[in-house]
Image (cartoon, rainbow, N blue to C red):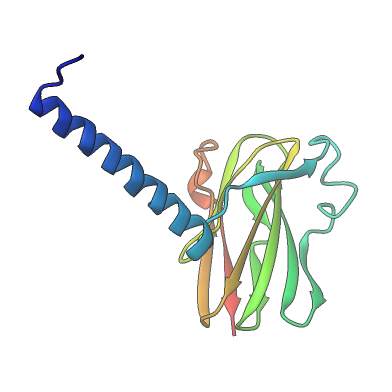
Amino acid sequence: MIHVHTYEKWWIGLSLAMLVVFAIAVGVAGFVLGFQVPEPAGRVDPNTVAKTGPFANPGLRQLAPGKYEAYIRAQASPWKFVPDKLELPAGATVTFYVTSVDVQHGFRIDGTNANVMVLPGQIAKTTTTFTKTGTYYYICSEYCGVGHQNMFGTIVVK
């Protein structure tokens, strides 16, 4: 029979307890708080994405009362999001589709759980509901070059 020292038993017990706490935290984050793992919603050709398809004319599209889709294009030359302003009613649920024309960008909406990495050739997708009125800022959260500080936009919820 193997003898396990008392201190080792404590560390094993502590490790198992931590695993249980982590599993509970992931479950609560995913099922109660609505955290989601971003996934690519599709692929596009970064050379033609600004000329054809929904990213050629990006913006907000209403699908049903309170349900919207927003197509946003990120580009590093000149550093900007297109469009850089959206207006929504309070309580709106928006699915954001974001892609990049040139380099890796980030797309994060302050005050929400929306935060995705935007890669050329991929469409990043995230959904969030705006329950409170006010101004929300979306920013590039990945360094993308000298004009990175200029990459932001606003969402006005009325």
